[in-house]
Length: 146
Image 1 (cartoon, rainbow, N blue to C red):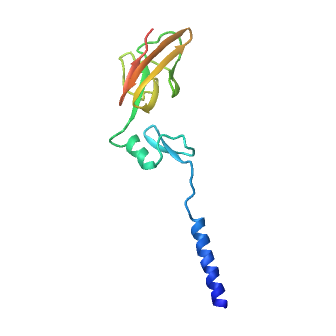
Image 2: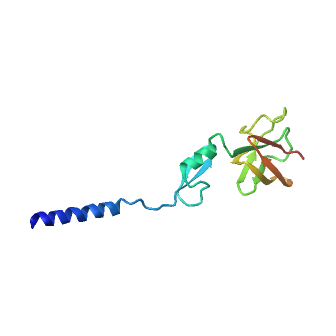
Image 3: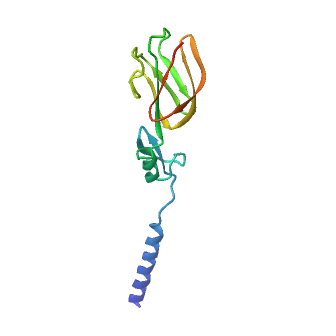
């Protein structure tokens, strides 16, 4: 009798262990940030798995693009804030007299976003650029002039 109670107890313990080891559903998803996959602890990420994120974010089928807003001269209105629709804002803090010097330059307003079309506006003290549409590729430069 003692053996059967022990056997029943072990069977119960085994079943309980299997139930408790079931994978719990979570809301983890993945987003691409500056070419790197980051875990997002919500269901609002772009990708449902790390492998999907890595294949899109840093792989050969990379859908991540860059856009860099710049000026070639001091436009006389201070720093220029650029607003990219659905993404946010960044600030142009300097200028490049020789023209576009590439994406990710410190003085530019830089965005790393999925390739595609976006609208933007910009403003500085006393001046506002009207809304325009751009298409973001691997490295897209947009010169602001007044």
